[in-house]
Length: 610
Image 1 (spheres, rainbow, N blue to C red):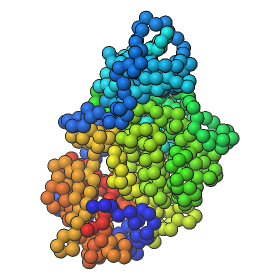
Image 2 (image 1 turned 60 degrees about the vertical axis):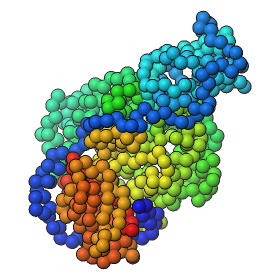
Image 3 (image 1 turned 90 degrees about the horizontal axis):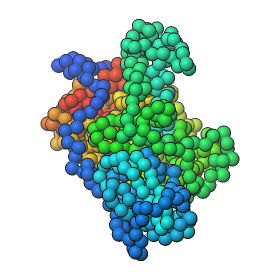
Image 4 (image 1 turned 30 degrees about the vertical axis):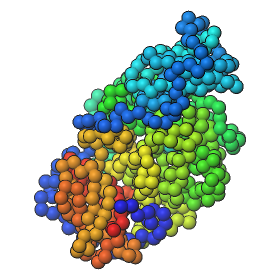
């Protein structure tokens, strides 16, 4: 069944006065046996390393894009001269360099500038591919290869050659979006040190020196009455330690440099694509690692661990950017001034938040120059506070990138919007959907549903579930390990069809039962669904779209039966439909009521009952 987008796209979905989160039906407790379930969940809910029993039937699938452009034999009688002298006649694009990762099982594209005219060849791992240089440029598509490396990659042309060293073949990802992608590893390390010590630690060499063992007592006053923050500090410290000591040549990174945002003229004038970017390939270690995405670190680290193949991460992201600025010019032009990527007050021509947010500026400068590289998937972390028309706009952007990249099968792995609370604000013209406290809204909840809608509308798009990892007071999720791992597991489940303990339950359909109840079917249920708190945070609405409290019981292995004392003819059901739906911010477990057999909490849903 198709999910209902009415609430997400602007139709009023009112929460009834005096009921549930708007005022509160008295809590019925967790029921018989609930205490034991709660204790088990409390000790096991945190996501650590996933398990994979099978990498999946699609793990070695060959990407069909551009296979017709691969030539494994010369077209004009050209022969490779391995004795040719090194020459500077070929200048590959910035991403085409020693230390790079080439996309496996794909017709990977290499390109650049050259003074040479005529046929040329590229050799790597015993395979030779042929291309043609003309008009000062070259382009070639390589024969698909399995994962491996490091190899030498040699360009040969009449009278010259060029060698790139330490070239790997594996999975390549383009990491993009705003600040939760752009949040650097160095930030995590600094935060881990400072939060651990609460200002009482020893400050040396520009950073707090960590204790060898986590000591809750060092921060007792700051932690007052906040177990959630207590766990956050411990996680920060452990993540910082993990990141400091990591060194893996098979996880490789390229960080696209961003020009000074204060140079307004630079961004105002970026109305056409740039020809190059700043950056270089390196292993995930040292200063290059410290200046890389913390989310990307954990995403790539876990994916490399579970697959055992080289992984390349290309980071092109910037905090505070609207979807508008990442839109290709042709995509934006097709919508014109009606193309509202963010809230209604965010238009493509509005430079109020910086010239870098003008329409297509980030795309022109930092995506177009790297669009010819072959990627397995974009990993997208973006959308905070941008719920109005966000689904339509994201869908257009995915289609626009695929067309511009010449990769119609390009995957998209979207970070589902984590929970977010008090910092979520209203635009001046935003219409609230319920008589709740002044700081409450449904912006984040709406965005989550629209992200899922895009995945329903387009092939090759998946959305990870991240409701555990948000924070009430902060738009930047503290737990980058949690969100990074979860995105890696969702990628593997969706694109590889991997099997194991990977992702939470997801609701996929809702149908009416014979007595007026609604049956909701889930996937990823492990050994079977279970419910506590009588289904807390579940609501039902009738034909007027007013949501009332509902209850749920597990029925069979993958189905919930939902009923409500307040709605006779249920038209819609939803769960966790709040920006920050935890009833008690200091007790994480009180958010959950729907679980898989291995204690994964189900994510938000909004479904028509048909």
